[in-house]
Length: 258
Image 1 (tube, one colour):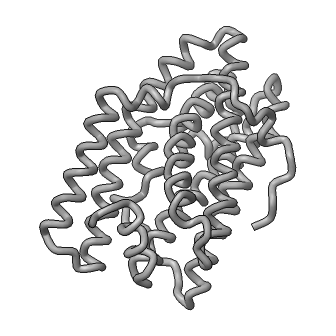
Image 2 (cartoon, rainbow, N blue to C red):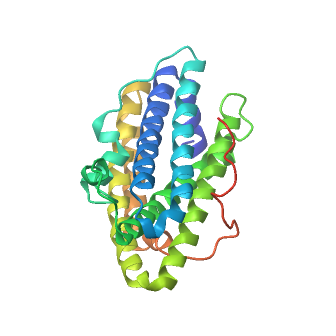
Image 3 (spheres, rainbow, N blue to C red):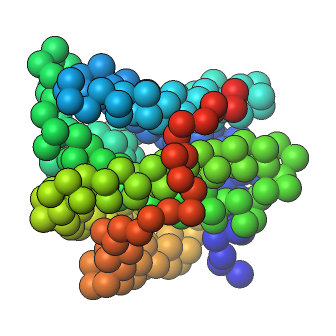
């Protein structure tokens, strides 16, 4: 029977598919770490109180990248290059989601509007990350090899999502509400298309490695397109709502070491 658990278990059990999966995840987390570090360095003077939280966000992402690479090496393997069509963060940038890397490479301080864009982008992508880790947590929290890593990363992603909600609500109260809602909607609609394309690409690579029959690959692709259709119709709304989180000041406490 085809299920999320059986699919991930198959990927986990094979060395080649496992190291590709972890390499893709590590690459995305490392990129997120770099982006947050640059944003923290370029925060405008009026928003310097945000810098420690943004730095913490980036440090967590870097930690996640190290964790995924450690999982690969624990099996006596090495990370593999990330296929461009599976590079979620790169494709998001190409679709105009978040702050352009060319902007982050400069030394010009960001504006308050840029911080709002960063937070809106993060609110959307952290929703995805939180949901993905929740799925892994549900099925593999007690797994002897990856259980501890899944618990740690899932907790961090929930913290990141809570932080985005809280900060965006603060900026909304300061008068940025219309810009926040507009940016959230644009980011969400772009992200769901990128997520579909990346999912199809990842499943194509996994199918080749694991020698899936055509019927199985076709069924998985149909499922991915089905999820995209639902998200395009209504599911994107879960990515743009804002509510005060139960976890307050989620990024002001010390981050656990990897």
